Image (cartoon, rainbow, N blue to C red; front, side):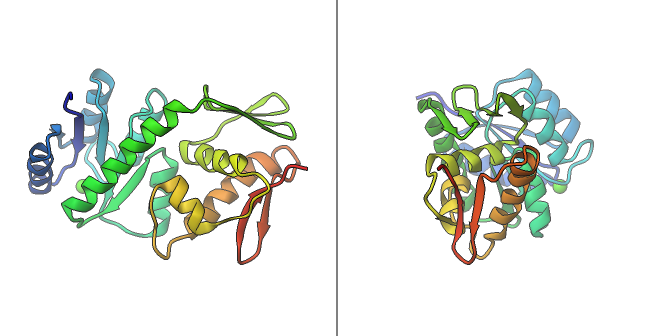
Amino acid sequence: MERKKILLIEDEVKLARFVELELRYEGYDVTVCHDGREGLQMITDHAFDMILLDLMLPGLTGIEICRRVRKFSDVPIIMLTAKDEIMDKVAGLDSGADDYLTKPFAIEELLARMRVAFKHVHAGSTKKVHLEVQGLEIDTDKRMVTVDGTVVDLTKKEYELLLYLVQNKNIVLSREQILNEVWGYSYIGETNVVDVYIRYLRSKIDEAFQRKYIHTIRGVGYYVKDE
Ligand code: CA
């Protein structure tokens, strides 16, 4: 099996060195970079299987790098952040990151998150279906969402959340279920990330098209209604 290529962009030299050695030991091919702008250039020039991206970096922030990378690549990105406020997490995820990890973290935790993110890549590429709910269509081949033929511009997580809701239309899904399925594991006690993303979707779909696709059952969860 070919070794997976990981790019680690982290300006704390000691931490970067530690992660590099641990990942090498696990059999990954690791490239390290300490500067944001340089890191973005490396992603543009070379093919990596995963990016581990620090949030606060000289040159360019992790969020900015993530946004730019998402314009041309779906490579899994895990954000490493020293801050743990929910809004930072949401901003990180909304920029297109697949996951985030708060420093300091145990290396086992990072390895586990990496495995989850790799699994999601393969899961996403195998099923190609066309889903429709009253004018709202999802083309999973192109990862494209339209309402009455008009393309809706969604971030990666918004798309994944909508897809999960539509695949399970008319079934009420709890925040925990949604977190587990869309984010890949439990964010204990932080289910409000789901509420934040439901708000994003409602503003881009329900409000923008004057429809009501996403319904709330107070204290229970959310569902997409198809009559
Ligand atoms: Ca940093």
